[in-house]
Amino acid sequence: MYQKWIGRGWRWLAIAASTVVPGFCGPVALQNATATLSQTIGANFFASTMIDGNFSGGLGQGWAIFNGSGAGAETAVFETVTDAGLAGGTQFTFTMSQLYTAATQHSVGRFRISVTTDARSGFADGLQNGGDVTAAWTVLTPVSASGTNGPTLTILGDGSVLASGTNPSTSVYTIVALTSMTGITGFRLEVLEDASLPGNGPGRQPSNGNFVLTEFEVSADAAVPEPASWSLAAFGAGLVAMRMRRRM
Image (cartoon, rainbow, N blue to C red; front, side):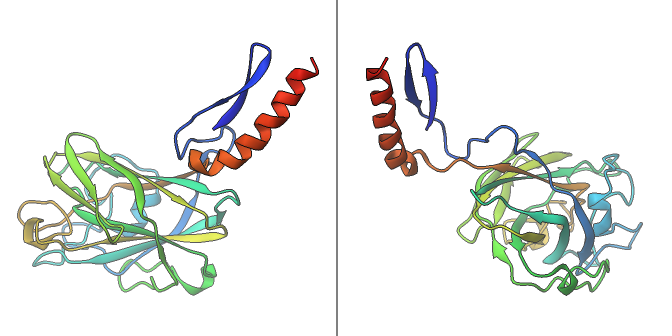
């Protein structure tokens, strides 16, 4: 809830959980993308291209993991340029653009996002194959997940997201998650196998379960707590407001 002056008195107005407080939103700059495996067949589909700001979707523009026979579970990590996370809680929005134009239906099928507060010197060595992705990771369980052009994104019990239904030529996923953690130094993106995906995934490419993730972006906003958690504060502030009105 929040307080607003209406007429001659204060009124408490309900707002939804994860409502953004103006003035706190902004992109989270990422660096030093590192992966356990990046595809080098056909072109270099390095994890580093996910944070280069190039949305063209051309050959070699985006992270892919085809190893010659298929695609399996792999991990990419990113460092934050500066520590992320607000003391009052943070709403992170992750935008995953899958805009590959050389072929169709190369979106991610199942994935999970985590955060760490470990020292940047201890992970993300910048290698595109066999990179250091080891840290103390905390899974972010999304509060919402959606994709453009028709796929259904389902949030699973382990915090991962599974795509099903329509398999579009291109798609942009938007994932929203809340955390009370501060001092966040990195993000982890796991792409996971699933029996419902072609070749067990982790992508939705029909013949081999690959994907091409063009860009991975993060933005941070201050998250307002659930309205229920404001009840005590609202009661106290309401008494103050009543006293103020009586004095007018």
